[in-house]
Amino acid sequence: MINCSLFAKNLESIDSSFKAGDPPAIVIADTSKLVAAMEATDAYYVNTAKIKFHAEQLAKDRFELPLITIRAGKIVWIEGFHQITPAEAADLPLIPIQSVSSLVPQLIQLVGAPAGRQAQAVAKAKQLYDFAACAGFAIN
Image 1 (cartoon, rainbow, N blue to C red):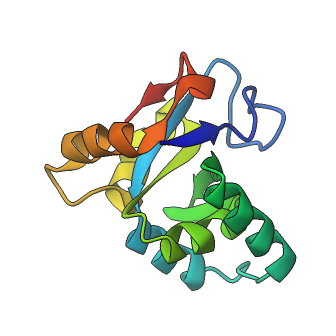
Image 2 (cartoon, rainbow, N blue to C red; image 1 turned 90 degrees about the horizontal axis):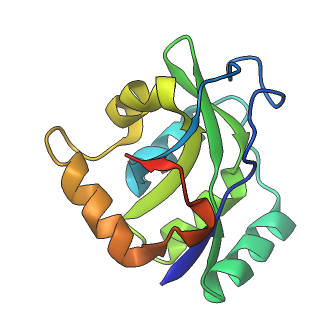
């Protein structure tokens, strides 16, 4: 199993879209949708050293969840571009991402499993990933 870690447990000081009292949450995302969202953003850039680092971590069964928010109906990456490429290269069909509870429905709509299949995606992700370090966070 791949051991997951959070980028941060307290998010409100990281970005203005994260409000005090809005608990962090994990969304199981479709890898291909995340790649498309990543490539569609103007902020996309490649840092081969970071990609290599995250590929090495993934080879050791470690994965830091990308931290994502939404603005104007589009995904905004706070941290995590470089985790996506190694996950895609490893043929992982699902990637857990971190955000806040209030954004879960929008994130599922933008990058979640196809309609009606999110519960199946969560069940499958729990077979691929160990969320012990994320205890107390809702997995959607």
